[in-house]
Image 1 (cartoon, rainbow, N blue to C red):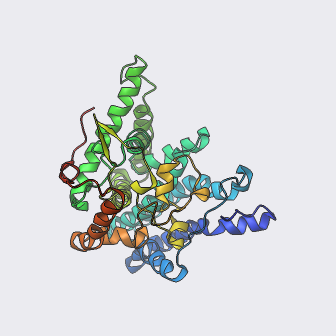
Image 2: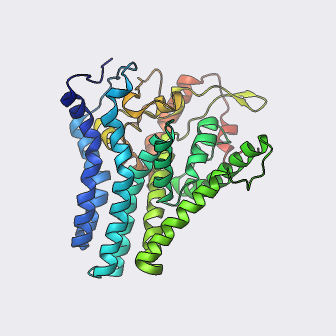
Image 3: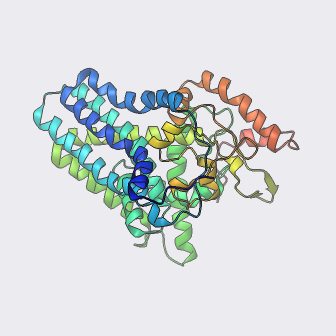
Length: 380
């Protein structure tokens, strides 16, 4: 077990610095907006392809940080997640002002640029929102809501905290990709089911307090207000075209998020104990990845097995597991998400691993048909 350096201060900053690599994508986005054309491709290239290459060069990191590391030693790790919301908003709306007013890019170039910006806000912004929404300080939860509203996916907070973490690996979790389900079936399904399940979860919580779903404390009102606010800002900048560009950015951010969701739990299920009950969530119910560079980019999101085991653990303290405790992905998320877009390649890569996982952890289960057929959430 390794400890995050506690002294001197410079050492702590240096150790946290790789997680600040995301800021390097901002000047890439600005250059793409100024140059147009081929430069727009630099944004996806700087995330998916660059970090896939870096994973190959840098390798894996299987060391675990000291869980007793005090909070004051994590300041520089937390700071990047708190800085990013402002950075993202200034980048998206600043570039929108520039391209709309300058008119130096063709309309198709503007569309492609904002699609590429969606990869930025999806890969970085939603990942940071995911970290922030799990924390206790109100400021961090507010930052999460702002980031999610900026991609028109605010209900993700309710779905993730109230549904996904509770029902992961069961038919009641829309986000757990089923064995044999392609991403192209998963994506439209999860868009609808996660919205419905998140609203039902919030409605159920209010009902337990004898409150109606339309009570002012329902966070969906906040979600709506924030999202409408961002849409109106886009309209003020560029009219309907500004709204279209903003929606383009949001769609591709959501697309990127759900690609990652698809990879994280594909084919993994919790054992059914009868009467609608399932075993407790364990590290074995999430795919784990220890590729160092992509964990820098995604602030250790790939140590997903530990995140579901201890959801409130801050990202610099997330632990990794060996093969005996958690299933391992062969590559980091950037490459795995690209493979997921090719169903034949995905099945060839992942189905043998899912079958090995079943044999290792649940050799007593001989008939997996009920798990394969569970493609819709169970009624609440």
